[in-house]
Image 1 (tube, rainbow, N blue to C red):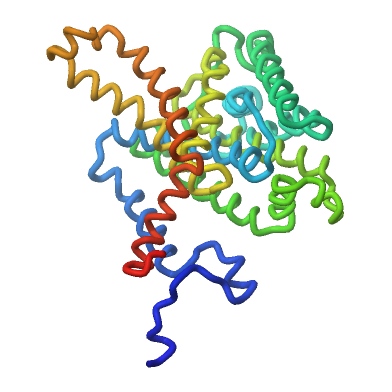
Image 2: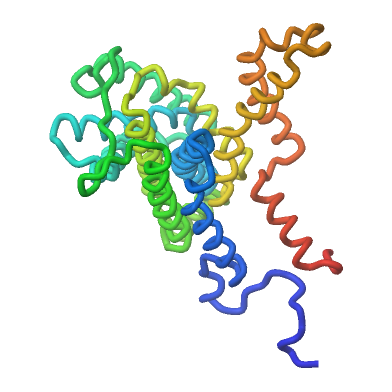
Length: 357
C-alpha cells in the first residue's frame, strides 16, 4: 500500500512551517473561504432583521476577540471591557464631528486612541493579578463611566453624541445590507491580525505569561511589558468594535456601556472558549442569538396553559436576563472549554471515524 493512501490518525505537525500555519489543512481553508463567500452574498436572500443580527455579531465578535487575547491568551482579567468598547464609539464620533475625519479612517483611529487608554489602565497589571486586578479593572469601569457623563466635549454628556453614517466615494452605507459589508471587512481584518499575532514572538510570550509566569520570567520575558501590552491590544479591538457600533446606530449614548455589557463580553469568551480565536466569534453569535431565541420561545408559549400558570408574557425581560446567567453557569459546569473545544471534538470524531479514539 502506498504511503499516500494511508489515512493519518491524529493531528500532528512535522515542520515549523506546518506548525505556524493558520489553517490545519486545505479543507479548513476551503470551508472558511466558502463561509466568507456565503456571507458576501447573504444580503441577497436575508432580510434586514437577519442582517442586523449578523452586524451585531460582527462588532461584538471583534470586541470579544480583544478580551479573549487579554483573558484567554495572556491570563489576565478584566471586568471593564464595555467602557473601552464605548470609548471607541465616542472617539470615532468625536474625530468625525470635531475634526471632520472621514468615518472610514475615524474607525481605526478611534481604535488606536482606545488602545492608548487601555495601556494606561493596564499599568496596574504590571503589579497585581487575580482578584486584585479584577477590582482594578472594575474601578476602571466606574472611572470611565463617570468620564463619559462629565466630558460633554467628548461624549455630549447625558445628551449623547451623533455618529455620521459611513460614506465611501459618495456612497452612503446607511442600510443594513450595505453596512454589513463594512463590518464583514473589519471582522476579517481583525481576526487575521489576531491569528497572526498568536504566531509571533509576542503572541507566544502572551501564552508563556498565561501558562507559568515564573518560567516565562526565567526565560527572559518581560512580564510587565506583555501584561500591559495585552491590555492595549485588547482595548484596540474593543475600540474597533465600538466604533463600528456607533456608526451603525448613528448615535452613541453613555447609558449603554455599563457593567452588564462587560459581563456579557466575559460570557462571550467563556461560552465560545478561552484562548480560542474562533471561540470569540462563536460566543458572540451565541450571546446575540440567545435573547432572540428566548423571546421567540416565550412568545410561542404566550396564551397557552403554561403561560396562564406561570405568567410568562409578563416576565419576558426577566427571562432574557436570567437566561444569560443560567447559560454561563451551565457552561462553566458542563462545558468549561467552550463551544470551540466541542466543535473541535466533533470535527475530530468525523475525521478519525471509525477509529475515533
